[in-house]
Image 1: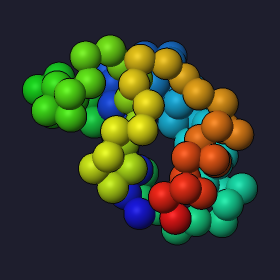
Image 2 (image 1 turned 90 degrees about the vertical axis):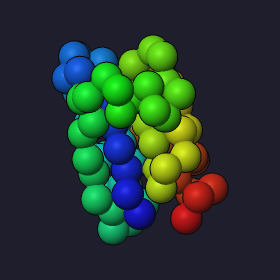
Image 3 (image 1 turned 30 degrees about the horizontal axis):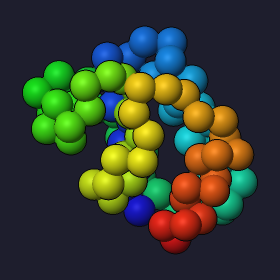
Length: 79
């Protein structure tokens, strides 16, 4: 599983990464977490408002920071 955090590195992006890592740990999932900061690459996913959460090239969340519990539910549905 490849998890990407889309955003320039702002506080919301950092919070999303922290919540995603927590959800992955809670589910004991083996995943690679990548940060995507290039605006062209972010726009390539169709995300116009950051932060964004992408799992295996599917955009799951954009423009907000979901809770770790919500991310867990999204990851469980994809696992």
